[in-house]
Each structure stands twice: as structure tokens, then as C-alpha cells.
Image 1 (tube, rainbow, N blue to C red):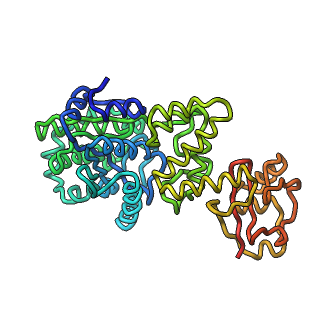
Image 2 (cartoon, helix red, strand yellow; image 1 turned 45 degrees about the vertical axis):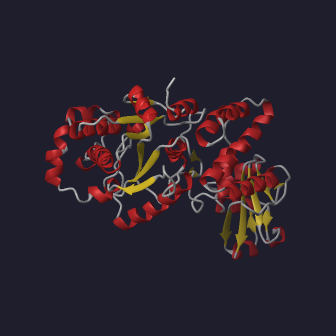
Length: 415
């Protein structure tokens, strides 16, 4: 059992997968406040649920009095992390990188306290030092500490080399630059711990060794498990794509509903990882029998949404879901909306075509199958005929509510 309160809770909640020296880290944590960091590359203008384990790990670190550092990869984004990717990332312009940085900074500030208090979190962009690095100096002072043979042995590199795509020299430099980040953060902020997902293990170990070689200091690495659902699906992926933390990319209602739809077997694990609820309460909720587990899912959805957005929005989403699913009302607050041309409705539109236009089905044929199977509703009424003509007479409060199955609902407006 670890001595430090952070490792005790991190272990109990399921955050710990690997560590370079868990006993040494425990000792350092027990002696007083430490600084630890996780890097986030701005590959999009929002983080998604797949990054939430890392954000919650920083949040937990801060809860136990330590100083979290969120490292924005404005410099490394110009190369792109090749870890376990089938092909190279497309290179982004500086304008795109800057816009993405602003988006993910908002995500981080929502979950980790920045610029407020004695253990305030720090946001820093590695472009501050990476863009100033002279190439010859980097090769001479840093490159000398890296073994190509060792780098080739990393799983993240081997999987790419086994494919015809290969690995570009540009991408091969990523691990060196990430390791240099650790050394720079150690110098600037006394950072002694790098954390990340288990896919970053090779890069993290390289950073630990670089700091030891160049600075003569002991630092540590810790990884969290990469999550999949009990059915084997990748965490944060749905049929509609990634579940983003930015409300403009994923509505708060859809975000709440994603967590409400958690598989029964995952409820306890997700409560421990993604909420601030006490562990005992997480275990109690996970043990609820039969249909009562749905109440635990609602609590999970509301707590996660409150952390990633805010409490009022989370409760509003829960209320909208309750009205939609349990009371059968046409709840307009919180449901996702789309707008279609009014001309479509003026002449009448077949039900199957409306479902395809609304992207509740991927094609007319798929929409026909949905309706034939009894899974399509208009304003909470089952559609019996795939060719049913829908007109302005079907509008309810100037909108149509479409439902695909029990869990996917959409409001359609026309203008």
C-alpha cells in the first residue's frame, strides 16, 4: 500500500498501469508537494473523452495538494505523435495549431484549476522552447543520449515499421522532443513526474532517462491504462464519431446521454475514474441490482457532465432526458437540433428520406430498414409506413422530433 494519499487514491480508482519506480515516486510524494505534467497535442480544437482519464489524473493530483502542469504541444504538433498510428498525421498550419490550442486550453481550465491557489495548475506551451532550439545543438547535446536501436524496439515504433507506410524521419524525432520537454519542465518548474496513457510509455521512459543523464536527477514516469468498454469498443467513440468535450462539437445533451448509455459492467469503473464521488459511493452505486443500475448511470452522466461543463447544464440535460425518455414529452431544451430547408417540408417529404437527410440513418435504404423494424418515431409516435409523407401539419411548436430507437433523438427545424 502506498504511503502518499495521491497514489493511494489513484490506485484505488484504477488510474495506475505502469510506473518507472513506484516506491521512489511514493517517497517523493510523501515528502511534500511535487510538480507533475501531462502533454496534450492540439490535433483538434477540442479534446475528447479519450483524453478524460489524463485530465482527471491531473485533477486528482491537484486534489492531493500537488502542482499539475498541462503541457500544450504547440511545438510537437508541428511534427505529430506517431505512436500506434497507421499513417503519418497531416501537417497543420500555424493558424490551425493556434486555434486548436485555444480550444483545448478551455477544456483543461474547466477540469483543472489554473492560476488560483498555492497548488495552482500551470499551462505552458512547448513551442516556447522547441522553436528556439538550434538543430546542431539539439543533435550534439540531446541526440547523443538516444539509442536508435532502443527507439526501434518501442512498440509504438515497431507497429509502424511493420506496415508498408513506415515511419518518416520527421516523426522519428517526436520521442526526442517529448523527452526534451521533460528536461525543460524540470529546469523551469522542478517537475519530477510525467504521466500519460500507456501508449506513451516508451516516450515517458526516454524522458526520465534524458533528465537523469543531462541533469543528474531522479524523475519518474507513470501511465494510466488505455480504456475500452466491456464490449471492447474504444472509449469515447460512438457511431456518430468522437465524444468531444467542447459543447459546440458535442451538445451537452449528447454528452450526458453518452454517459447515461454506459454498459452495466462499466458503471463502477467509470464512476471511479470520471467523477469526484467517494470510492465507497462509487462501489455502492455499481452494486445496485437489476434496473436500479440505471439510476447509477444517471448519476454518472450528471457528475461527469458537471465536471466537464457545469452543474446547471448537467442538471438541465438530465431533466431534458427525463422528459424525453420517461415522460414522453417533446422536450426541446437540451436536445440536439438541425435545420433543413423549408422547401423540403412545403411539398411533403417521405419519412425515410427525412431520416436520411437528418443523418439519423446513413442512407435511404438504412432509413427504410429502421422504419420497417419499428425503430423510427415522429413526435414520439411510431412511423408505420416508410413512405409516409410528412408535411407542415406534423410540426409541433414549429419543430419535428425524430427518434431512432430509444436513445437517439433529434429536433428538426425548417427555414
